[in-house]
Image 1: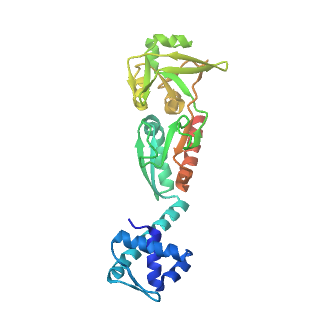
Image 2 (image 1 turned 90 degrees about the horizontal axis):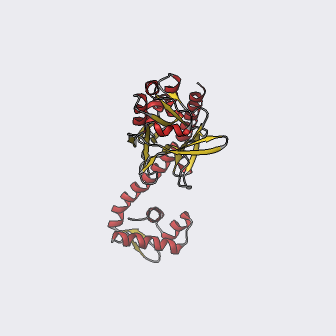
Image 3 (image 1 turned 90 degrees about the vertical axis):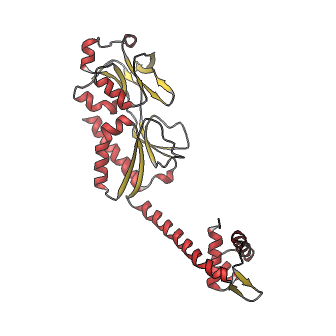
Length: 300
């Protein structure tokens, strides 16, 4: 594949009628210009110029190739201009990865409202609790709980003080005593979540500035946080969920919080991207929009 800089040299040499003049316009050494032309001719397997000490003229192959070289350079310029425009406007394609429960039950109407404010944005949403590979998959940003394991990623806080809450439905607590202390969980059916290959069965709580951990058990495990929430709503057991996921359920009495004398495990929510160059105006606007709605959710 010919280099762009070699194509530029070729086009300028054809326009200027000489290699030295093209080198001066591109601010490169004459030897570098000559090397670029030789490299391009070698890549194409054809002579592009008939050269002498005094003149430079296109060959038949050179005249034919010049048309295509101009098209390529024009496309490159137009592409750069398009990226520059998108970098300054709130619009364009935006691919987003969101956890299942938070995405389906909390954020979807917010994202509709965000698009209504910015109709030039085209959203592509991936809802899953499996962590997306931001380096290999075509995803611009991800909304994730916890701090990114890769220190090279950029994490913008959305709800840094969010915590987990132990909860179950009123129907479950009619059949089972509400737990008063951590050891009571050993006699309850605990609904567990899988992230990757690890089962989240060590539940951490804080009391008197000390962390206490209990290993729980139960008859249901899922890698989908929304399914764990639905099990809890159906009265099938205790769930240890992000408060953001179940905030509306708690307010409307569909779920009841337990162990209020303990503080739940910290579960900060971040907007994560692979590089700061991904922080387009659309991404920054989305971050600000979501932070505002998350604050309102916490206050209501």
